[in-house]
Image (cartoon, rainbow, N blue to C red; front, side, top):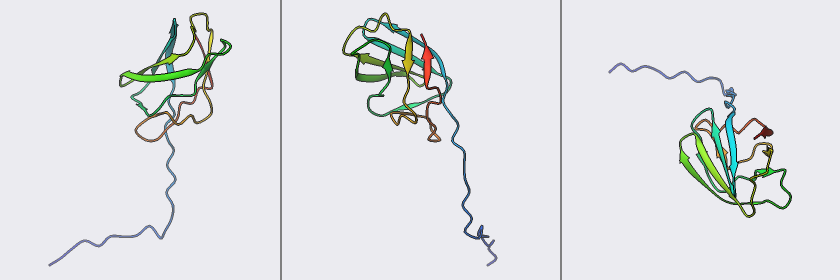
Length: 107
């Protein structure tokens, strides 16, 4: 019986680039920050996003659609003007493992 042989790649490591996630829009209302991304994302845990409101810390997060998440803060962030995203924050990733590439986003 004839079979095709598999050729090995001589143990070379294929480096793949993870596509970055970009923020399309963000809005704050009372204690909830709604963030919409340019592609479907997965949410695992609570993102460590911060705002320019002193003392505001994220307490919970839910994914309302494949491209949208809502983060609830412990105090009102209605007057926030900026969202700060830590470098390679692991709570929001895409299917290929990419991170949110924006470090700040103006509301």
